[in-house]
Length: 263
Ligand SMILES: C[S@@+](CC[C@H](N)C(=O)[O-])C[C@H]1O[C@@H](n2cnc3c(N)ncnc32)[C@H](O)[C@@H]1O
Image 1 (tube, helix red, strand yellow):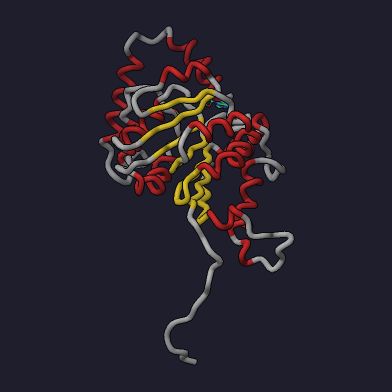
Image 2 (cartoon, helix red, strand yellow):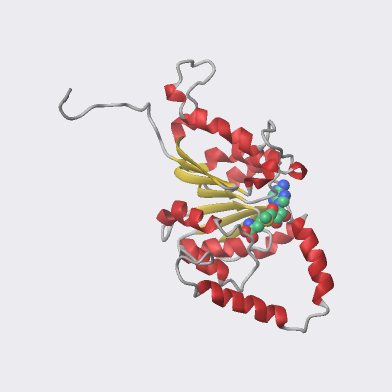
């Protein structure tokens, strides 16, 4: 809604502003961003953020604070044979960004329900058209593309979409891969099916992951059983509007003592 209002008023105001002014304004902001000193709120902390701020190619739409999160969880995959799937292609800019960041050996896959997004396919960037809410589409997708190292859910951001995508696609992320669901702010927004502590929002749904991760510590296997999620998930990282799930094969945790008793 805020973006709609912004675009609506921007279009109205634009005709009173000399041609070329916007291009000059955006170019100067980009330059300012990449040359800002560390400590400034606009300082670009990593390559990915520098790419984003300096981007003159297809449009990318991301939260500013996401770049530190991405780099923290993604940097170990750079330069490797990595497969990355992003749900939500929009103008194709983020797929180009992943291709740059992960390097020449990376294969990038995109999904969008807008058929026009197909035109953003290029070398090492494949795009499938379908809805992330359509479970049969996602099941077909899993047969068409390889298991991925990273899945980024940046699609329609409704509760049903985020839950269906997680339930269908989590097992298509490799054993030591990363699953990210972003823009979880919509879990608090009514128009996306959200609401504070409302059952069924992705935030409420994913709070249960904390219990599932700890299921080996449960003393009641009926209410909290060890599941595939328990066995295949190493850690959960909740940030503002972003959940990062680091996968990893796990066994029942063991506690040991070393050293000499001193009391
Ligand atoms: C926030 S934009 C993606 C932004 C892009 N990843 C970027 O960083 O620039 C959301 C995209 O999700 C797509 N989308 C909306 N509902 C969808 C659905 N049910 N299935 C797949 N894609 C959907 C929209 O068409 C739009 O292109």
